[in-house]
Image 1: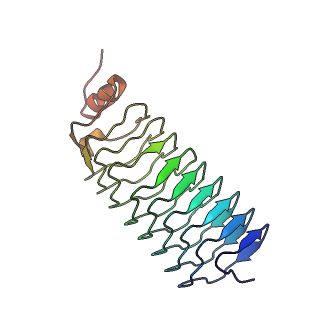
Image 2: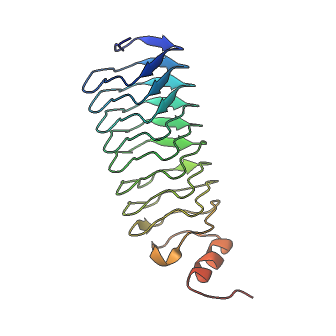
Length: 206
């Protein structure tokens, strides 16, 4: 089965299909499952997906502006250099996703689990992640100016080379984070974070 723009699909399974370079704007998907499908360079602008799974799918350079994904799984997917402006990820699971170089202006991440995902070199300034699990996530070389992580689990995440100017870590878990690799400027931390930072430098807190 092929996909067509402005159509709705329910409880369909798509395996190893190539939708690259196709206009699939304003799709509505419910309980659909995609396995190793390719959407490189496609337009999924206005996508609405609920209770769907995307396993090892490729969305590189895909246009997904104003997409809304709720309770979806994106495990092992590549979204590098995708346009995710004003998109919304609600209670989604994206273990091991690659977002390197993606455009996130106005995007929303609320709930869900994106642990072990890569946001390498993304511009996430003023972005807000709310109650998202981001354990071992890769934020190297990111712009995180004025970014907030309330209620997030950032244990063992990596921030080497990231711009953390006025980044707000209040309410986040930061166990196992190597503060020696972080360049902080007016970064907002809680007392327990300051203790973790001191311990990263070998201090013994009595």
